[in-house]
Image (cartoon, rainbow, N blue to C red):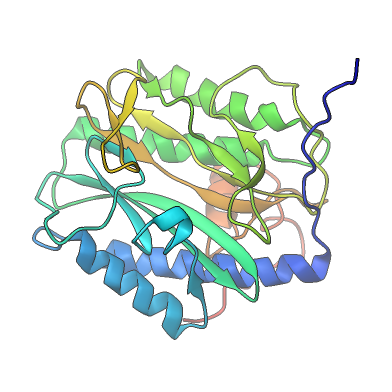
Length: 285
């Protein structure tokens, strides 16, 4: 009997990581432009057009547009929509909504991928807490992405934080992934599980980590459009994502403008952006 081989994980050189940083910065800056654009009355198609224009004007190509027939530059998922919402002129944001915006860009053949969930106007304390828990779980997962760790150490860190904060539904069947010369590469990174399993993380490996957390149960259903995934119970969901590289100094968050300095400092984690002599190198817009 043959042993099942683990999927190969692409390892980047230092020069290739700098190219990936360029793609990551473009994604991060595009998401900041979109964050500022979110308001009651704007449509998800309006946001999509803003994203495409910003990416192309800054030398990138949208990763999502045309991917397996997807029509948008971003995935725009409102309230009970978890991921893969298709931008549409009929989807108008209203005060009290939350919207997940997932964005990808290609620069010189390399991919960046990240997502934020943004409040629309004033949201409830329950929703605000959901966003805080989900975003913090992302950074806990990123902090676990150190050279020598195992893949599921990230999964466990995400789950442990969410479980410690309440009875939230952690979405299964969707998760993070490898990234580099393609947007989706091996391996899949679940947002739950026991630590100590999977491949050993090595410098030069890059991953997109993306927890998806529901106010209610973990159960989901895909709509008839073949893309949009929603909560089965109709309660709201949140989704955050960053692309990061494993480095000898710790995780380097390619899609964060400061490479993770603020969050890792807050968590007391030594990382690329907080190591002595390292600069965020965010540059200007």
